[in-house]
Every structure is written in structure tokens, then in C-alpha cells.
Image (cartoon, rainbow, N blue to C red; front, side, top):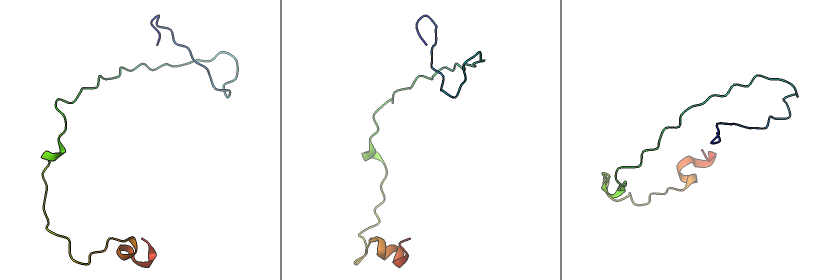
Length: 69
């Protein structure tokens, strides 16, 4: 909306010339609240499950077989 409270627009070609009724919905956009403090992912909890098993292969073929799924 412009400062003088006017609105303009262009209708698609599918709308034939002539008089039409147009409905305009006006909603208020909520203010975005800034984060109170920066997110520090280093403070997230971690779980140590130990070393990976020897010979572990994470290749797609080894996980899913010949089907690829």
C-alpha cells in the first residue's frame, strides 16, 4: 500500500475487460522478534558412542545391497 492508501495492480489476461468485484484481504504482518542471545551449538549435549566398528562400510551398495534401496 502506498502512503496515500492507494493500491494498484494488473489483472491477468484470463480476466476479460469489464466490471468486476475485487476482494482485498488486509492482514497485519507480525514483527519478527530478534534472538535474545546467539545460538551456541557447542553447548548442545553430545553422546559418545565410542569408536566405529572395524570394517564398517557406509557405501550405498553395502547398506542397501543390489537393489540400491
